[in-house]
Image (cartoon, rainbow, N blue to C red; front, side):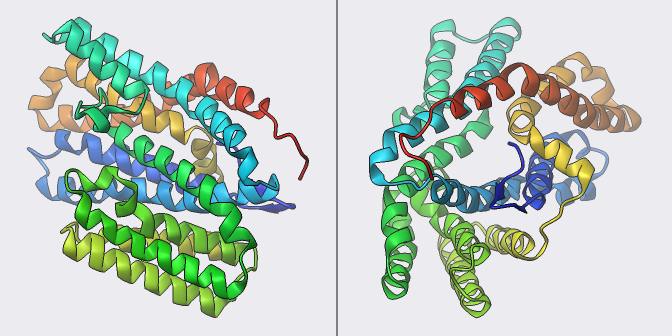
Length: 337
């Protein structure tokens, strides 16, 4: 996505963080190449799977920023959702089609089943029908879509509430996260499980817009992180990395506004990178299967994955993602901010 700005205040750090998050995920998914020869390095790269929570915190902040800037009200819900769908779906459909077609050409897979998985993936309904995504990273987009619906419905109430009522509402939303203990199944793909992380992004938005003081920001951050540790880390058994990375992301956004230019450049097409890196890994492993058997071959293949995934993502961004961004901007709200 492009740099997010608000009333002249640049948040270039967001694109740098997006790049870090996407690179973390790609490194994690390619770590298996190093595991036979460098198990310690592979173990370190395991932390990359938590890069998705950097994305969630960023969404928790920038979507309210965008809603505030557009003077959003509940009657704008159809327009908001249309803009988000047009923004996200064309790249999703294109990447899912690449994965499905390559799977059909290379793997011995039932065509009808593959079509079912593809259709469930591009509609983000796979978890509803217990169908696997054609690309495992799509579960995060399913979560994001749930968040868009939630924030589009909740934002007008949160934004217009008094200070006292806003605190009550935020505490209620935080309490709602414990519903995840009752839902069963794959908790990570359901919004209640992720609410503490998104809420960390929201209180970062409040602090950035100077709607809460520094002391209140830190109090909310400690509370949300504590709930994340207890609910996600302890009760759900996912450990404490999710809460820690979410909190660190929030602190970075709150106190570091300028990013590093090379990372910010990658952050511009981080969504494309996120979508396309797994097909690149699969393709290179198929072509370079022999390299995986030697130490230097595995190292070279691991490095090639990062480089080629970045190049392919930049190409994918220009052909698919950037046009979808332009299309979404053409869907205008009926009123001016």
